[in-house]
Image 1: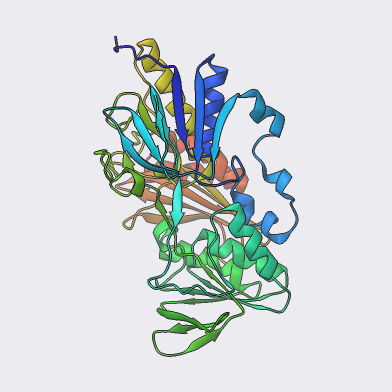
Image 2: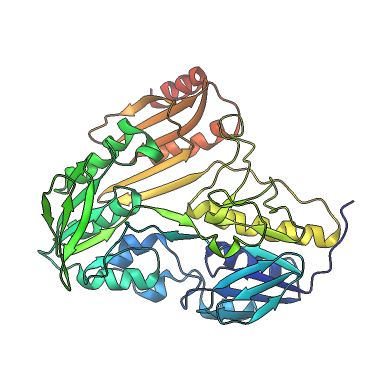
Amino acid sequence: MVQKIDLRHVVVVGGSLSGLRACETLRNAGFEGEITVVSAEVDTFYNRPPLSKKFLAGELEQERIMLRPAEHIDELQLTMRRGVAASALDTVSQTLRLSDSTELSFDGLIIATGGEVRTLPNQPRLGGVHTLRTLSDAMSLHEQLIEGAKLVIIGAGFIGLEVAATARTRGLDVTVLEGLASPLVRALGAQMGAAVASVQERHGVVVRCGVQVSRIVGNECVAGVELGDGEVVPADVVLVGVGVAPATQWLESSKLTLRDGVVCDDTLNVGVRAIYAAGDVARWPNSLFIDIEPDMRVEHWTNAAEQGAVAAENLLAVHRGEQPTPYSTVPFFWSDQFESRIQFLGRAHADSVVDVVAGKLDSSFCATYSTNGRLTAVLGVSMPKLVMPARVLLQRTTSRAEALTHFQTVTA
C-alpha cells in the first residue's frame, strides 16, 4: 500500500488544456476540496491549434476556440488566479510563490505550465515583429495579415508552416527562412520534411533552407530580415517561429530535476510526493518507446489532454493510498496546411529507415519509420485511413518487415 496523503487543496499551475483536464478529472472523481488555478495568462482554457489556422484567418471567433463553455467552468468551482505567474516552489513547505508576491499553500500540485516561445538573440522590439503562442499573440498577428503584405517567417516548423498557409490563403506574399537543410528535420527527418514542405511551395510560398538569419532590420517598424551573406529579405511583417522551451524557469530553485522539462517517473510524479507534471513541460519514460528513447517530452494536443487527466488520477490514487498508474502513449499530432492534413503517429529518429508505403511524395502519401528494426512512426499527408489504424501496430512491437507487409495488404 502507498502511504495516504491528506488532500484538501490542489493547485494547478497553468490555465491550459492540461490544467483544465486535471481540474475536470478531480471533480469528476468526486474531489470536493479547493482547486486553485494559477495562470500567467489572463485568457485561460482555450484551444491553441486554431491560433495558427482558422482563428488567425478570422474564420473563428474567440468564443469558438474556448475549450469549454463558461457555465461548465463555473460548475467546476475553481479559484482562478489569472494574470499571475508562479515564480518559485518550495517542496518542503508545500508553498507556491506568485509573481504578485503572494503565496499559496497546497496539499497537491499539478505543474502544467506548458512552453514559452523562443526568440532570436537580441530580437528587436519593432512594430510588425511577432511570435505566436498565446491568444493575444494571434490577435496581434491577425491584424497585420493584410492582402499584398510581405510576411517573412523565421523557422520552418509546424507553427511557421501553418501560419504560412493561412497568410498565403489571405493573399500575402510569404517567405519562410530555415537554417537547417530541410524544414521539419527534427520532427520528420530531411526527406519527409522536404516532402511535407512541398505542399507550401505548390501554393506559392517561398521556402528557403540552409540560410542564416543575421538580424531583423527596421526603425520603428520592421523593414526586412538580413541574412548571413548580407542579403535583406523585405518584410512588412515578421513571425519568429523558432520553437518553444518548457516553462521551467520558476522551478530552478525548487530542487526538482530539470532537463529540457520537468523530469518525471512513469506515473508523471516529479520525485516529490503529491506533485505531478503534465503536458509540454513534462519529461517522462514512455514504456512504448523506452528502448529507443529513455525519456521524452511531447508538445502536442493529445498528449497534453491525456497527461492532465492522468496526473490528476494519480494524485487522487496516492490520496487514497493506492498505487499510481504508469502512463504510456503513442504520440500523435496533426497539421492542416492548405488542402492537406498532415498526421504523424509515434517517434522519428535520425537513424530511422523511412519507407514510402502508399502514394507519391509530390502529392498525398504515407510513410513508415523503423528504428532498430521495428516500426516506430507513421506519417501521412492526406491519408487518414492509413495513418490512424496504424496506432495498433505502434502499441506493440511490430517489425519493419511486418509493417511493410501490413501496408502492402491494406493498399492492395
